[in-house]
Image (cartoon, rainbow, N blue to C red; front, top):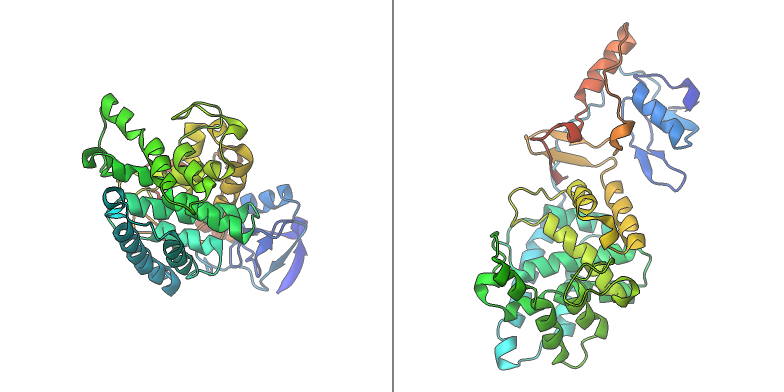
Length: 366
């Protein structure tokens, strides 16, 4: 292994260590065969020296594509996620009709056991994105939102108490849906009539009043049930609140809820992929959310991809090398000759630009 200045790097060299940004994020992972395009990008990130393997690549000795099994922790998380959702549903099954207690503390204890399976919030979100098993239900959706809210609160550097409060807000945010007619609240993918949609929107107020029956439910949890469809620009419902009129935790839940909807297993056209979430927020309007929360969220979501092995929808295994804006990508394959350039061509052609492939998407983060 040797350290070289960026100016001495050549196509075909192989990274011996992760290349980090100034704030210690992985920019290019270890074992990548460098190309002119990657080397040019390093300059833009103020990277000056890089650790390189002693030998040049004489073939794709570190190919992008490889197979890897889902971690044991992720598989355990998937099983425990399903068990938690069943437990959560059982606790709420008779609550609206018999005025039975919610057992909020026991539910949250079970939730903390679930999230403790993964040691870091990045791994926790990836495990959530890879979780399969339950048909879509209010309880599964609320659990998704609770996990994402906890992760976002962690990325916002909140205290552990506030992270758990954010999770509790996510867990109970849609609980008003159990008060709606089953034909509207079932979660099945269908187009509601305008009248049905107006009824569906009342779940925010129903949830606020339902949670208000019980002593000990934090005010922010009630507010999240009421306000999670309010938008930062005032275009949401039920009251058209905007900016700081919306509870801080409801603003977190609004982002988590939107991600959960974007990757929902009830939507056959979506993939459980953070990139689809980025596209979703861009399309729905960044101004509708608390921007300082959303930018932290999107930056961290994109960082999950760097150096991650993934499985694509076409059955291809691969590594994410970097996430780039469209304008950063070259329009044409570079031209040249010689052995080194042949290696460069092989490597370059092995890179799939997902934005240019309409029928290929990331299916699973491995």
